[in-house]
Length: 359
Ligand SMILES: [Zn+2]
Ligand SMILES: [Zn+2]
Image (cartoon, rainbow, N blue to C red; front, side, top):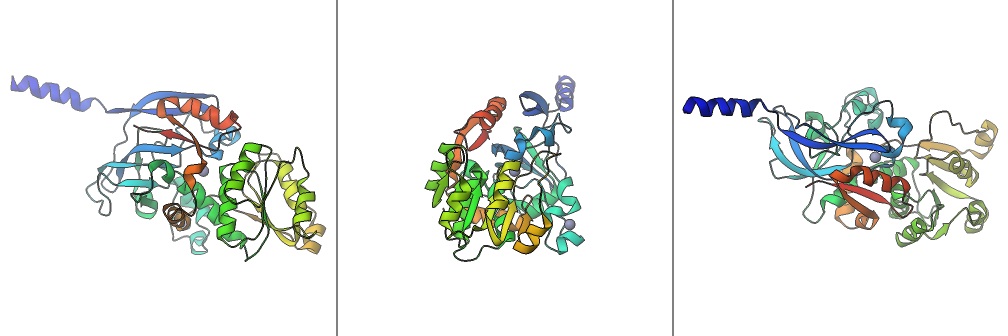
């Protein structure tokens, strides 16, 4: 009898525990499939996903198609359900936000503060991704950029830590001064976050432009002083009117369109800055005249992703209510409906942040 029980246990042991994950084959082909729950090492933890945001970059098929099939999701929050023996600062039951990319802190880039350009940054990742029932947090991610979520912040709100961090990094690189005028082109989730942050960092007038009126209304709620729908009104004219004919001190382009960049360059004042925040597909080029750059001293400042420095600041802004991220969440879908969540994020003009929920 005992031998029989033991042999049954043996069989159970060899069956890998499975979980559901949303596998991305292409933008309109996302399938729920079973895969093994990741095994963790002594310095890693396993997190049960509770919420994970869909990012604009998750919707850039050109960026993803060469890597498919894969499990996306880099804005996750959840609860630690297992930890390795050597893990000290975290416990089972902790509510956490996990940053998928972390810098090494030792290389030339890191020593210059360019953490998102560190070689290790791209190589690190959670396994398999945030759109799964569980994901593993490797040691570098756990040590550098796994943040405990305060009680007054929900799992859904915590998914905005990463996008808010990206915006903080961009705004800081651009160096807003008290009273500066700022234009935000593209009022998706990050465009609206930029609007709030610009104010927090001291901007005076913030002008927001988008082709969707719904988004402009939200931008107004988040502090935009003027909003423009370029299909009805000329942004350049409005900017000139609002800035005594000068143009803005800073134009942030958070729409992945060449047209947006052209407009952005045209509305900067002499000595102004253009922030490159959204990439266009490969093969698209912006014509820039060195003569114009030189005589007008225009600065072009790109900002990619976020580091452990800004994620902490983002969490604090969310915790303290300075950025009401819950008002940016328009849709939530269970993991089983990840395909529908993507379709909504892609097609629904009245969507901002779309979130996939765990159990
Ligand atoms: Zn993102
Ligand atoms: Zn590094």
